[in-house]
Length: 262
Ligand code: HXC
Image (cartoon, rainbow, N blue to C red; front, side, top):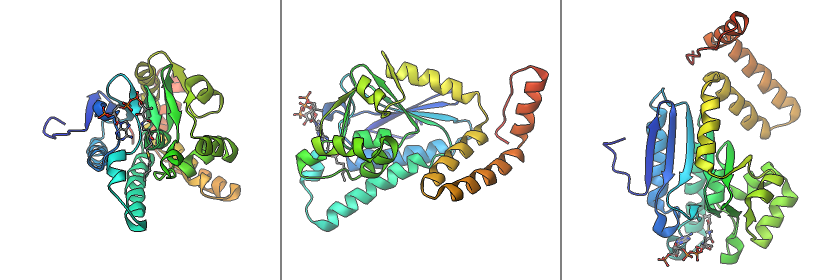
């Protein structure tokens, strides 16, 4: 990544683990159009590298994960068309993130508001630090969540809880977020905890994990019957991999599996 001059994000690699840090602390890491473009570019680049097996998304500086869409950019827009385009453009990047074949973890180290919470919702799991504050305050701006929040939050925690958060615009602390299933873990240091979780995941079969993600994602869009069919199809694909051979053989040999992603 040295040859790429990212200005609003940082991307670090440690073995199979990539960490993408949204890094505009002066604006509490708000998602400007340029920031979105860099995130999209970084995700493409990471996926070109077969060594990358897990991704953490976090925020730079002391205070925020991401405090939302860049409000100064939003304020300069007007009209149905501009609003729709801004929403769709952000949704595309969130979709790119949710569609990655590798596990993704949001390490929420402070404010995750509006588009920031939507970014965290586009990850597979969420880890909050004690200082995290999560919310969808768009209605205080005369807006609604536009990067998938109305849909992903309701699917994750149920329509009733999602409507409460979106209509009150209130901020939820880590413990309440944990209790409502909005985050998976609370830890003193979200990034440290996220790294631990990622290391655990990196030991698992990478194809199997990508199939888990696909089964859950596609299943949420269909009936139970349709979802079960998807599961069986993907199960068949898993059984045709070398990883399955290696995983079962390693178990029987009482050793750790060495998955190759084949
Ligand atoms: C642009 C932002 C920003 C944002 C903070 N800043 N959030 N700039 N966009 N979303 C800037 C501030 O203007 C300020 O800049 C600096 O970051 C520090 O923020 P403060 O407000 O001074 O900090 P503090 O008093 O600690 O308050 C923190 C905060 C507050 C509670 C997080 O900043 C806040 O409410 N931010 C907005 C949160 C929000 O409404 N997000 C939803 C956005 S709408 P200066 O230059 O003064 O130092 C959205 C829609 C998505 O996400 C869908 C679109 C299609």
